[in-house]
Length: 300
Image (cartoon, rainbow, N blue to C red; front, top):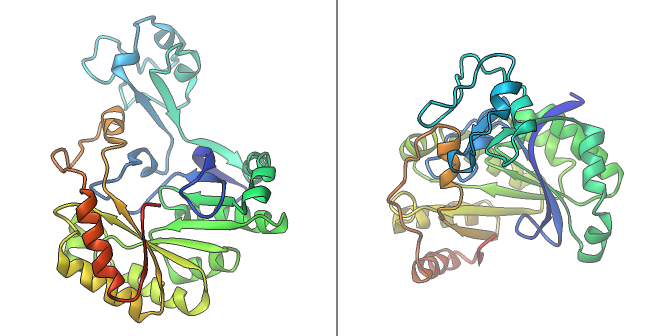
C-alpha cells in the first residue's frame, strides 16, 4: 500500500529511541488498553473530535457542513455521528481548533519527506525515525514500505509495538528495523484479556521468536497501579525476559496525560481514580527486575 492513515508526526522526540527522533504515529490498534493515553489512535478510520470549552459558537462549522451533521445545541458532542462523513471540512474553518480531524491519509513519499526534514538532527545525535501508534503493524504493508524507504536513505529505524500480530508480519518488518521497543502489559493471560481485550499468547510467542533473529530489542513495561504492579507479575515478567536472553528494560509510570482525550472522542475512561506510581514504587519494581540481571531504566 502506497497510502496509510497517520494521526501525528512528532518532531524532536527524545523518548522513542536513541538520539533526536521523528515519531510517526499510525492509526489503528487491536488492543483496547484501559490506560491508553492515545485513545484517538485505536480506530483505524479518521475521527472528528470536539472540545467544548474551546467552542465560541461562531457557527462556522455549521455553515460548512454539507451533511447536516452538526447541531450546536447538543449538550456535549455537536455531531450526529450517523450523518458525519469525517471529511474534516468543519475543522478547516474552526477558528479555535475546537473541532479537529484525527487521521490524515498520506503517501509513503509524503511521510518520508517529513522525516527527512530533520536529517541534520538525526546525524548529530545518532537519532532517526520511530514508527508508533496505535499499533503500526496494523498497517503493515504501508509500514513495510516506509521502513524500506527509510533504510534506502540510511535512516535509523525503530518500531514501537505491542507485538500482537501474525509472526510473518513481524518477521518481515524486523529485517528493516534497527530497534524494537516492545511492550509487555501483563504476564497472566486472563488479566491481559481483561485489561487489553486480547490474549498475551501471540505477544509472548512473537517476542520469543523475535529474540532469536533480532539483536536490538528494548522491552517496555507500563506500570499501572492495581493492574500489573504486583510482585508476582513483576517477578514473572523478569523471569520471562531473562529466559529469552534479553536485557534492556524500560519501566514507564502510568500517568494521566491524555485523559481529556476520551471526552473528545466520546469514550469513557476506565481508570479515573488510579493514582500515578510514586518514585519509591518505581524503584521497588526496578530492584525486582534487576535481580534477574536486567538493565532497567525508569522512563522512556
